Image (cartoon, rainbow, N blue to C red; front, side, top):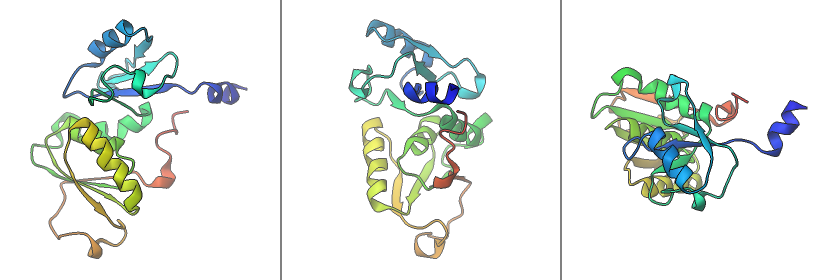
Length: 177
């Protein structure tokens, strides 16, 4: 079946860090490293989504360790792009990323706009992955362990300009498949 074939070799989709490069320029770096890939041409991906023809270990990706690129499913990339579309997040906007772990959308929001971001997750161990991701990408956000459904335990009372909530049960990263 088609689903069985897709599960044998699921696509490996990358998000190019727009603060460092363009999708088109990163394609050239991949080609120089002997890796074949395509840029997702749909404008909804902002020219930063790249799909490898064959998955590979992240240490084979040019600039991965330096934060030039991240592995993130194409549909998962849409959430931050929708939230930050057309300058919707002005510099300094206060943004909450609830259910933030493992940090892909958190990082993408910080790549898209100069914002004051609080990354919240109920699992402190998973929140450590967010910290690792931000460190690799050289980005900063406030990280807090807490339940988004119980703001009295973590919220300081200052309003947010935007909230991204990709609840763990939503499977937004795979819904496109």
